[in-house]
Amino acid sequence: MNKQLLLDNLRCIPDWPIKGVNFRDVTTLFKSAEALKEISDEMYELYKDKGVTKVVGIESRGFVMSSALAERLGAGIVLCRKPGKLPCETVQETYEKEYGTDTIEIHKDAINENDVILLHDDLLATGGTMKAACKLVKKFNPKKVYCNFIIELLKEFPECRSQFDKDIEISSLL
Ligand code: PRP
Ligand code: ADE
Image (cartoon, rainbow, N blue to C red; front, side):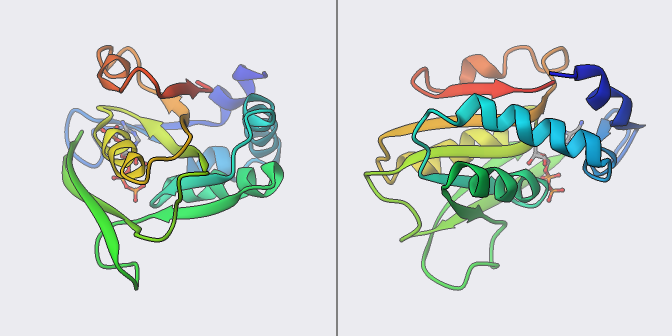
């Protein structure tokens, strides 16, 4: 993988949205055709042989690559959204994140026991969002759950990965 290409296209904004947060702005990665292709190719290589049936994208920055990846993998896409956006019955989880609390939800009929799930988000920080998403998805008893991120803030949150259930396979590009 051309890591440098991705790093060169990633914008960091200090003290946004609040003081102390060094915000990794993936919009600059997404606007570069070369970086976008690199991310898509790398993610496809990681999951092409895993039998993924559904990619679950986390609102909102997680939606971008989830849709590209689902199409390439021949999988469906499920939207994991902030509250009040999905029109039918949902299952919900509330969680803590780097700057505040939030709730996410998935339609009750979105996943079944035969699914192999790939959860995708742009970034892993405290892990609050993805741990809540994993909890949600596990309520459906899928065959297997994978988690993928473009960026993982390992140095800032070194304990984060160890807080996930051990049966969940996690990978990140940067
Ligand atoms: C960001 C990011 C992840 C989450 C990561 O989303 O896209 O979803 O925070 O942080 P965590 O690991 O501490 O939970 P945000 O809630 O800012 O929403 P957005 O994608 O809609 O901007
Ligand atoms: N979500 C949570 N923490 C973040 C960060 N530092 N940069 C971008 N998105 C984030």
